[in-house]
Structure formats: C-alpha cells, structure tokens
Length: 260
Image 1 (cartoon, rainbow, N blue to C red):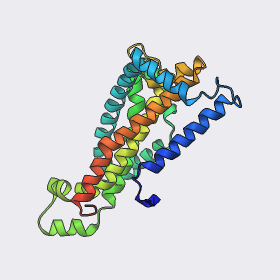
Image 2: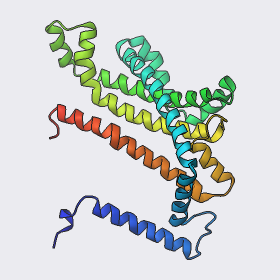
Image 3: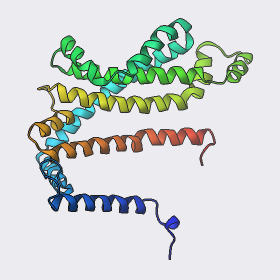
C-alpha cells in the first residue's frame, strides 16, 4: 500500500476540496442557512453553465482581461523606468520614491471619484484606476531591487570598463531581475483589485466586465452569480500565474543554477 507521501501531489488537495464542497452543499441543503444569502455549490455551477452558454460570462471576461492587460502594461512600462530613476538619483528617490510608498498604501477605490471627475464614465476612467493600482508597486519593487544589487558586482564590472547603458543592461538589471519579477506579480495583483473596484463603481456602455457582472448579481440578490464571478476572478488569476509568472520564475532559477 502506498504511503501518503508517495501519492501524486494533486490527490490530497483534490480530496480536501471535494470534502469542503460536499460539506458546503450539505449545510446549505439542510436548511441551516438561507440559499438566498449562501448558494449551494451546485447552484453556482448551474449559473456558470448558463452564463457560458449565453455568452455573457465570456464577453464579460474578455472585456475585463482587455482592460487588465492594457492597464497593467501601461503601469509596468511607466513603473520600471521610474523605479530605476529613483534608484539612480537620490533626490528623485527622496521625492518620488516617498510619494510612491505613500500612494501604494492608498486603496484603489480612492482613485475612482477622481477618475470619474477627470475622465467621465468612459473607458479611460477604468484604465486610469488600473494604472494607478499597478504603477506604484512596480516603482517600489524596481527601486529596491536595483538598490540591493551587491556593490561587488558593480565594482567588478566597472573595473573591466563597463559603464552607462552597458552596466545597466548587463549587470544591474540582470541582478535585480528576481525582485523586479516579484514586483510585477504584486503589480498584477494590485491591477486586478483596482479593476474590480473600478468596474463595480463605473458601469460603461462600451463594456460590461466581471466587476459589473458581480455588482449586478448583488443588486439582484443573485448570490450564485456573485460567488461565480468571484470564482472566475480567482481562476483567471491562478491561470495567469501558472502560464506567465511561474514559468518565468522557473526559468530565472534554472538560469542561475538554483533549480534543475
């Protein structure tokens, strides 16, 4: 008989998940809680299937992903050079770096009123909130990663004649890459949160995203829809990590001899 340690890695988590879902289903079906407030897992699956067949869920997911990727790309494209500038120039670090630290702690929903006043109920308002949720995490991560590059690397490279762009591209950025990648992951998470806040509060006629779908479920007391959208958001986040961030992290570890 195989010991638990020899079982495939997915077996135990799968069993735990099935037990949890079974307990949840039984608890709701037993009448101990109102199904209006806490839907059974089977009701959530039913909503999921109906939304897929109608195309509503796929359309909302596409709108949300388009906004998320564009906002994250803009935030990262601005955050990387700004973070490098903060690390390179002391007075910029003492001003913009401190400001970035403060703005990172600001909840994303705080940007929504400003976005509505500045851009109106338009796509730009949502993108602005996503960019603001992304950029400061990336700035801080790049700044700290560059500042933490071992001075020995810099002295050795400069002794061999490296300076300017060559020093940055061949020594500083490769050494800072693990921290930069961690900052990108954090920026991606903040972008998700920012986008959900924006879509809940800003209903745009050009695109009904997952946040709007979630808020519609709340207004209609469709808790199966609310929890279904939450599950979709979690699933998309996990897929992004499995498809994009995790392979990059594994490649980085292997390139440095930390993993085979």
